[in-house]
Length: 313
Image (cartoon, rainbow, N blue to C red; front, side, top):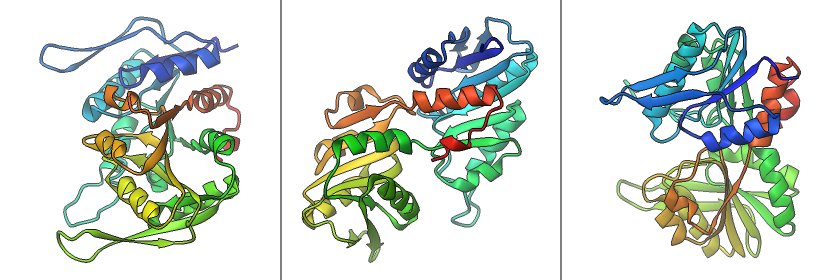
């Protein structure tokens, strides 16, 4: 039935692309994405896409600039090959943290990337857990922003049943944590971080009762893990029975894995929007859940022009 659909992938997360293809029952498209000797991205599409509904699966993760260029050039190649519709499937949207001006002369890189994707020729964007909801408004094409919540909730319900508290690591994530806790049947706590002065340690005030509770720190992404490790220690010191972390995008750069291994974190639950590096894959505390089911269902509905709204949970 999916005779006009074509799925392609760059080099960012081919394993996730293969899982999506398996669930849809279609082969992964034949695209050769390499580099010239000077480092320029080289793309060859080795099959016909004329009049096809094309989905390019590519997280803009490490190395971010390389994976972003692969995505842009693949979109351009599909456009010039007369694809009927091009959907950029970007499970992890890089540069999303620079979504507003926080200082004079600062860029809004999330908007710049949106313009690049649109100008390259994408007709639609499918992403997951955008760092800021307003990024959808940076595009002049339809954007479907899915949430990994159903996958994470299913795992948590099977493994975290009683005396559970969902904790937001900062005030900006309160809404996310409240919705997650409501579906999990858990109470809510918030960490209020304050730095009293330059080069002084952060003071973490915990709002809510976590004494003797199993605690889940919820965030959309974890980069160097500095914040969650500090938060985990503060929660443990305040009497939490055990501390786990749950996030969608495991960026985990720099000293992240070393910090996690030395921390009070019992389990670190992530999804496969970003492939783990070798060091992270060997970390016994990290549990990876796949979002291929959610993404494949979204791709199927987009192809058939069915409603995708029921997936925005």
